[in-house]
Every structure is written in structure tokens, then in C-alpha cells.
Length: 294
Image (cartoon, rainbow, N blue to C red; front, side, top):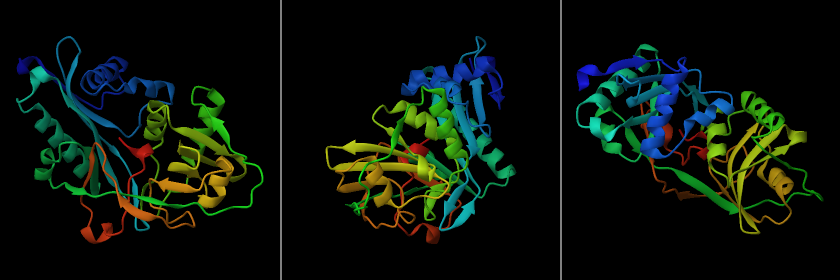
């Protein structure tokens, strides 16, 4: 059965092959990445590695892509790894291990200095030098701002003009944190916002800022990400979102927010794993924004 499979890489230029990967991820994880085609397309740096059967069905995949990070003020050329899946009838035959090795070799040849991934099976990646890094969200009272009328406008990614506005904000954004954050990740921001109907995207026109957030009752909110040329202070943009918010839970390091929240351990469905970063560079509490999940 394995002899009939074709190993392909860098196949996103083939619409049928991309759809075959989308079908694989839909079948295994119940996520539909084909929606990316309505949001500007997949990350152009993506390098997928996949096995296809004679009918064109993708039976296994593991993808790498360029994911530059800011870590303690330094830009780190990192590779991200995602879309790892094998159909049940092809498991236990070494396909996934082969695809991982090809992706890791691609990153090494490309000069990437670090690797990063999210997984619920960390034991798969520990033999390749990845280690789990604890994540922390930040909680505290919202500073009061003198703003008589909230001025934020909600955006709808189904509206072409609003989608373009978010894309522009992401293309020109300042990394949301100097402690730990992505440099870009436009494609995953848009897809994650699309997947979660509870995420609100609000435009602060005077700040050229898009805030990704969720209300939590009448007086609390979660701040998931900020896309802006210059990240505005938390008190300022929360006042623009509504008049009654008193407490915030922030899902990225708050060093640019003119605000300090208490760090609390975050327990998610997946753990963050990295390799190639010195442990001394990861001593401050941080969390990868949910809008950068991949």
C-alpha cells in the first residue's frame, strides 16, 4: 500500500492538492482551512510535505513555514510547524516521522535558528529537541481613561472593505510585545478570527489599530491581540471598546500596554514547544497570542 503513495512537497500551487490537505485536516481535526482562500490565501512561506494516494487523497502531511518572532527585543528567524496529520489506516508505518524529518531538514537548510509548534502530543517532538514552555496570561484592573464616548467600530471579515482594513493593519503592525510575539502571522490571525465567532475585531480609526477581544460579562474582557503601527495603551483602547469594563485578561505579554497585569498559568488544549532558543531568553512569563495559534 505504501508503494502506491506519492511524496509531494511545496504543493500549494496545485488547488486540488491544497483541497486534499484541507479534507485531511477536516476529517482528522474538524477544521476547514479552505476558508483561507476567502481571506487572502495561505501563508506564502508555507512548505507542506505530504503523501498522496493514487486518487489524489492526502493521507499524511506535515508543514513548515517562516514564523519570525520577537524574543526579548531581538528578531528570531524561527520556523513554525503545523498541519501534522495521518489518516488512521496509514498510521504506524513511519510516514509522519519521514515528513517531520523532511520539514526539519528544510528548516535547517534554510538557516532558521529556532523552531516552534503547538501540540497535544509533546512526546512526539521531544526526541527532536523540542521542549515544552509554560505560558502565562495576565490579569488586572483596567486603568481609567478620560473618554466620554467609546469610538471603536466592529469589523466583519465577510465584508471586503473590513477584511482589507484588517489585512492592512496586520501588514504594517508593530509586534504586540518585545518580550515574546510574532512579527507578522497575518494568515493565521485572519483564520483564527474566522474560526471563533466569539472573537470581536474592533477598529480604532484614530490609532490605526485593530483590537481582537472577547467580552466576559458586563465588566470584564479578554484582550487577545492588537494589530497597530504603534500599540496603544490598554486603558485607552479599552475605553474605546466600552464604558463599563473594569478588569482585563490579556493573552500576550503586556510590556507595550502601559499596564502591568498579574501573570497566571494558562492551561490550553495544546502546549507550546520550542527548540533552538536559549533557556535564558525565555525566563519572563509570556503567552503566544491566540490569534497566532497555528
